[in-house]
Image 1 (cartoon, rainbow, N blue to C red):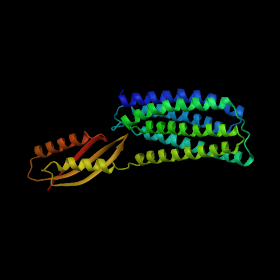
Image 2 (image 1 turned 120 degrees about the horizontal axis):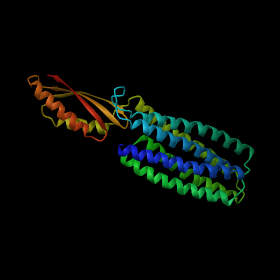
Image 3 (image 1 turned 90 degrees about the horizontal axis):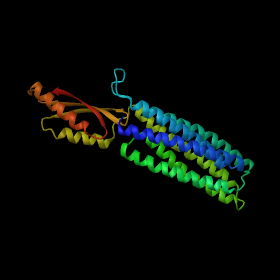
Image 4 (image 1 turned 90 degrees about the vertical axis):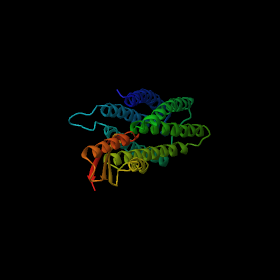
Length: 286
């Protein structure tokens, strides 16, 4: 198995294990203490389990080699399952927003408990470790499934810190902040879900390669003095890379062997770029 897929698989497994553990302790302490913020955090952990599971399944499908039915492989599975993760985030955030708003209107029954503080500290440490591991993997492999999980772990560190603050404030009689934090968590989860959805949607709708990579492709093509004109560059995503179609114009007096040798060389050089999966060059005489 490719190293990228192996690391993504491990990230998914670690996320599932860590989030199941956090869900159990958050749910128990949240309902006992009647902390809306902690209950919201526990529901968020349930969503995190789903996200980690989608990462595991999506990565397994994406790692499947190309075959007769899928000539370019299964890379887009990463974006399909990332979209599932984003939709689950948005649905969860809507429910949490409603519950937290109603609690703010009707009043919070949060009672300070040292157990709440301990759970928050454990959550922050656990999520910080998962975030560091996943970020390191994402920066190395630029996998959208890793990106979704990385952002999820980062968000959890931040929102749990605010949950901890609301618990401490309850100690001095400020109960309304608990509901406000619940609302804040909801909005944060929704925002993250929308950004991941848009990124996944763009790839599934065959967004073009970024301008920086396109510029690098043009630089490589222009380095061939035999190329008279670059007619067009067409690209389509294949997982986290792109399939590139180049149409170039060459001197019509060149032999077929010479023009095809040049095209083969250009395909090889462009395909060496980090974001390029495969390059196809079409030659037209001029």
